[in-house]
Amino acid sequence: MGIVQSIARVLMTANWVREMRIRRTLRALSRQRVALVLKPGKVLVIERAVESTDEEIEASLRTCLIRGWVEVLENALPNGRLTEDQRLPNPLFTDVSPLYRITDSGWSVIHRDRLWSVTAVIFAAASFVIAVLAIHR
Image (cartoon, rainbow, N blue to C red; front, side, top):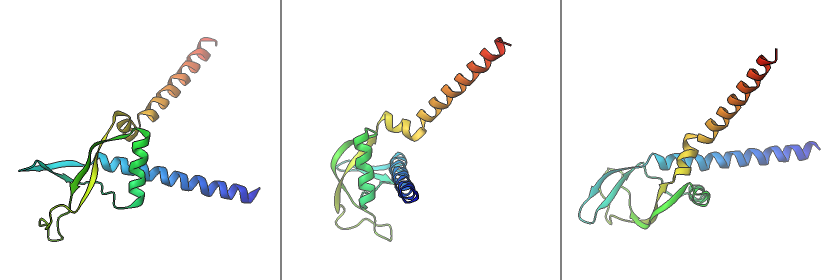
């Protein structure tokens, strides 16, 4: 029985770590912002952009998409990075990736609205029990 419990504990820990990575990716998406719009062509310069170059980040983004926490605003949006000396590269765009928007349910996850709701219900139920006990004394 000890080996089974150890394996279950490891699997639960791995699952928890993966969930935290998914939520960290969602929070990173919330910190993105448009710094400026270059003309011609209305090219968006996005600060703190989430790059999906890593497989874990890509998996986290797809999980957020499946859960309905994000949606794709633009698919195949051209992107590029500044050079190490903070200059524009040549060619300007080296890759394409989707641009994500956080949905209302994604913002609820970020702000942990469900936790606040459950906590409020627990406090309301405890207050009700205390009031009922006080009346019957």
